[in-house]
Length: 272
Image (cartoon, rainbow, N blue to C red; front, side, top):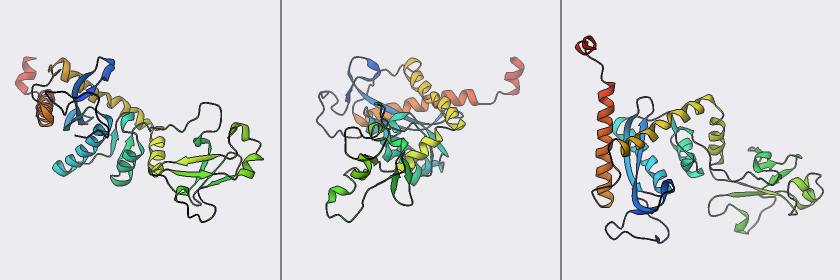
């Protein structure tokens, strides 16, 4: 269960660990979240994790389930499909760089500009020289000489800033569509940018479109959880109570799925 860095607005007297949420555009209520890791071929639930109903907890649950599934069953997925919530730089870096899993996940990217000026995607990354090349062919560097000022390096989040020369930018013919309100242009490079770029390239493939359709299977399981199994509210209290109820519900869903996957006997086929 992930803790919030700030004091929650409301606390349930009967279950202080429950999260005050307004998901699905309904009136706010206290709730827990259930997270599934499924096999998209058969819709069988591989693992389940109960968390507080906050985004950082859900992302952490995905890592927990992946590690636990590999440890228990020796199963490691080649690819993982998920929605945009899981597309932050840290999570993509963990999937690609540490686990070697192909992420069919939309990247959380706020670098695209909508005012008509150049976005970061218009600048070419030169990995060999650790610099960006602008559309006019000029280099944007993080360092041009040695500085003792720590502010010149990456910030607390690991984000790097690459700047163009003031004299070059002021004389550039594309200044009005690059940095009209500044003397020089700079672009930032997020941590784990290589993993983010890899995820962007994966999104252009046919496999991504297939994974997007298969991702709907987990949403169907959540819908069945409410409509067929009637799990609209929990009977037990606390994180352990939520964990037990979600686990039992997932087992019931799997049993129902296994019954449908079981091969029909000769007698059953003859009777049909």
